[in-house]
Structure formats: C-alpha cells, structure tokens
Amino acid sequence: MTPACIPLPHRGVLALSGEDVHGFLQGLLSNDIEPVRGGRAVYAALLTPQGKFLHDVFALEREGTVYLDAEADRLDDLAKRLRRYRLRAKIAIEDASAAWAVEAVPEGATHFGLAGAGPGESASAGGGIAYIDPRDERFGVRLLRPAEEPTGLPEGGFDDYEALRYRLGAPDGSRDMPVDRAFLLESNFDRLNGVDWEKGCYVGQEVTARTHYRGAVRRRLMPVALDGPVASGVRITAAGRPVGEMRSSLSGTGLALLRLDRIGDGAALEADGTPLRVLETEG
View (cartoon, rainbow, N blue to C red):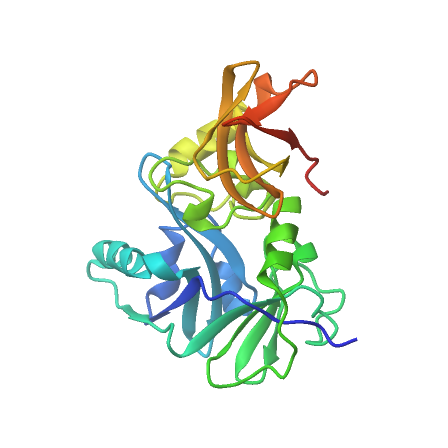
C-alpha cells in the first residue's frame, strides 16, 4: 500500500552551519543535540531563562549542516534569538524554508526503509531525509525534502495528522504552548522525548529540572472531545470552577491544558457553554 504524504506548510526550516554549531545548540536547547551527528533527529525546545516556552524544533543534520524544523510564521523570531546567543561562535544561521519542505508520512516507515526503526532514526530520501518522528514512533515518518523534488506519493489530509497528534497528546508550537507562558512538562515534553535530564545546563534548565524532580506538574495538555467548536484560550470550567484552558482543536477533538487535581470524579467540563470530556492519551 502506498503511504500518503501530508504537507506541513506551517513549519519552516533554519539551516545552521559552522564548526561551533553543535556546542552552540547544546547550550541552548532542552534536549541532547549530540545524536544529530550520527544521523538521528531530535525534538527539543528553546526556553526563556525562567523555563517558559519560546520555540519547539526538530533538529537533524545533513552534510555538516544542522536543520531546525520550526514554526514558519515565527522563524524570524527564532533566528533573531539564536543570533543574540551566538556571540563569537563560528556559526551561520540562514532561513532555508524556500529550499526545503516539511511533511509527515504516518504510514511511511516501510516505504523509506525505516520499518522497525526507533524514534529519530533516519534514512536518505532522494535529496532529503526521512526519519521516524523523535517524539513517538506512532507518528510514523517525518520528511525534510528539497522543495523542488516531489515525493511521488499521494497527498494526505492535514486533518488526519491533527487527529493523530491530539490522540498522542502532542503540542504543535505556539498553537498549543503560549509563548513566554507555557512550561515544558505541562506540555508533555517529558513524554515526547523532548528533554534530556543528564545533559547539563541549557537556557531554562534549572526551572525545568526542579519541576521534574519535585514532581510538581499540576497541569497537563490532555486530549479532549468537544460537542462543538471552541476557540483556543477559552476557559474551561467544572461546576463553575475554572479548571483550565482550551488549546487547538479540529472536528470535535483537540487539546486542553487542565488542572490535574480538578478533573477527577467524573466532573462535567464545559468551555463557554460547550460540553467536553477528557480522552485517554494513547500509550
């Protein structure tokens, strides 16, 4: 069966090159960047010093250049922030979005020779790179390919990708993690291979590690089913008591940031009068 390829045009690409690029990113991002040297993709975040979300990225390397798959609409902001930290490091940072396309191929592991591969493992795909999504292998393949080089695969629907993402409890950039407000652990980065607890210092590391080791996560992004449309940011209540906020949603499912201590005992939840219920995160 030929797998479908789902374009992700809301993602852009930064290209980082230079002899200091690995050490530079290692001191900034929430995950260990060393595996990219060996061809493995990594999911990570750039944080404020207070541990709050700024950007999520997929990092992978090809021919000495590290590519960061990040939010297209906020790519300039990411580049500016990286340049502020660059100082005297020998690094070039370029917007490569015009040259590269980002796509998801959920059923594409066999097609790209990655059957049985673990999260982040990669293979050449024409002039690009196919890799098992580092967040969770159930996402299947994520693809970085030259924009002018078609995959030859039928195009799939973005709604299918979104439905899978919601089932797995995975945020998608600032759509689900408000900039300078969201924290990584409440956004499930610890469950999505987005944080390395052994790598040492990075920006925002102290707050993230303290929350983890104290077990102080009081809120989580959770999949929810909706009985109608609800806008992102709408307050969610149980018996009139606030319990969280809605994030992105589509076709009756979505993600909501919920207080873990206020959603038990079968409490009826609603958002601006629309009933919703918590779904179990797959896995």
